[in-house]
Length: 166
Image (cartoon, rainbow, N blue to C red; front, side, top):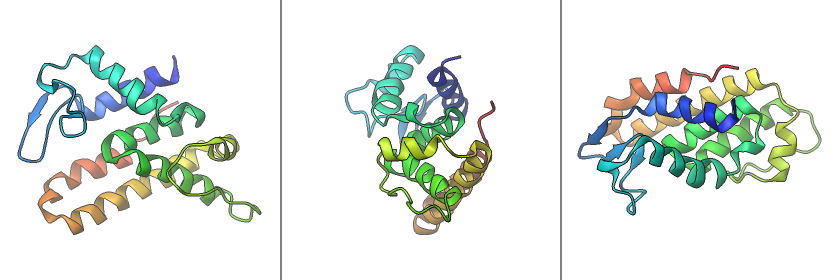
């Protein structure tokens, strides 16, 4: 299975297909009207959502440069909390495994050749565990700063713990 195909199933499994209309968001398949004002979210089809994810997330942020399972977790994080955080969590996981290596990669939230090269040398299971911890910490800090979002914390922490299979 193509890595994007596996990644989109993972993300859609987390996002669901219901139209959400709350004071915090209007979204369907995780495509939020606020971030996609050019999309008629309420009428969005699954195929349209898949293409948005392919072009505006997977390809745009070059997630295919990461090892498959790390790419899937980064993609899910990019979708849920934004592109900088998703790539940044992967970069931090890479650096955590490179302790003692003379050159750490830059943790800038931008996918480039330096990140891709270093990523090819990591242990995916360790990277995924590290990324899950980073994601959970992000959600906890977010709800500390924005208590009105605490209602989402349990679901977000479950999302952070969920790791892509082989």
